[in-house]
Length: 259
Ligand code: ADP
Image 1 (tube, rainbow, N blue to C red):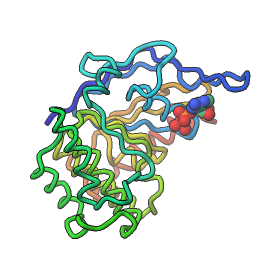
Image 2: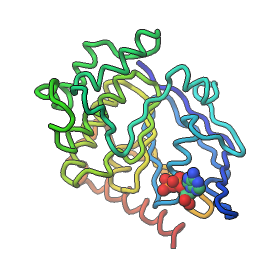
Image 3: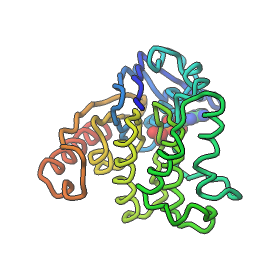
């Protein structure tokens, strides 16, 4: 399975609330290549979620346009081009792990839309260490395991573009560190394009091919950095000078635009 190219051209969005205007995004131009892993990095309020929702066709930009392999976000959404992994795992409480993962994928496959085969889904379940939990219900799982289910579910849909909005925000630091490498493993098995919102610099570095640094008021792209670390990425890399150099550079980018 392959990803899809996402092109964002001149996107701007202003929210009006109680007579006040918030310039959530202005002049965003960005092309994300098929199969690329891109992080949107920045502090709260710089428009990361707004951009993700515009890409996914959930809200309309005031100006500019988004296309996915040349199609608009609405037709891309109808064609099930997007998978969403939210902050909270949002599992269906009365379905087992296996059903939570396969239920939407089966519906999509029946409707003739992309979805991974049962064998491939099984492989993903094993890859993230969920084999023994297939028949468990969400409430029987820790937060970390629940988020693994949500990750596999996102990939099992077979969507070419995965939109992830701080999917690890609710996890403790140790679980979160493991979850990053599981995510990379799943991504390398599927080749989807991933757009990943985070405000963690090390997380953006360890995961991404490119990091889009965003700044607030108005929300905009302040810098773009290519992460030159080799793949597959492993925890050892977090000790490498190149990793620290990327972290330092991004910290400087953020400081330049936020102080
Ligand atoms: P981030 O994801 O980087 O934290 P958001 O995209 O959520 O940023 O928000 C960017 C700005 O737009 C913030 O100032 C936020 O308050 C505002 N905003 C986002 N969504 C809405 C909305 N539906 N109505 C009004 N203001 C909004």
